[in-house]
Length: 113
Length: 120
Image 1 (cartoon, each protein chain N blue to C red):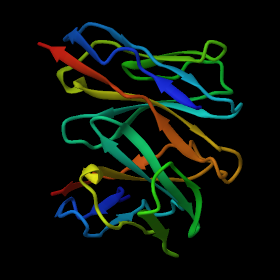
Image 2: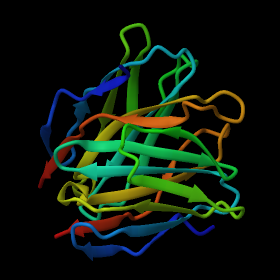
Image 3: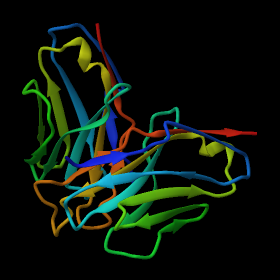
Image 4: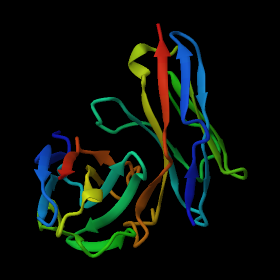
């Protein structure tokens, strides 16, 4: 079974631009979560989607948004990029109720200049 | 606030020896799962071991085992016969909102991590 995939793996953007990251979960997983990882703040929860609905959102500004499609693929968007948005963005999928293990993708490394 | 505390930012162990990584957590939920994840330099997050909070028996996965003390909210990881490939950042985490079908609080809360070095 294929793992979680994320595209692109690396991105370089400038301040003020916007960016869209994509995540394809493991087949059969309907829950997709996003996390931001930085050296200073560690791993922080962004949001979780289940069956195309955002069920939970972390403490991030409205510039961070996401969506989930009917095939469970998810995208997250960051508008008006700031230098502090430079981070590794991790996507994880899970089969809710079965172990609740979250399987992580390789991440997208975003650099904002 | 729900938190996870890993009090050891860095640890080192000699190859073939045993090391224990500490973790304490705080959650008001009664139903949750606990995890240890490993993140090597490749940055790929890998599950090491899982513990259901309602189970008293400590989880074991080959050379990895946990000491789960629910009342003390403690969840330490023991690595036996350490190998060079065990070198990585280790994160303790718990997931809440795990009722049937998940819930509006379904998310992982992570600790800051412990960087484990394995010396040959």
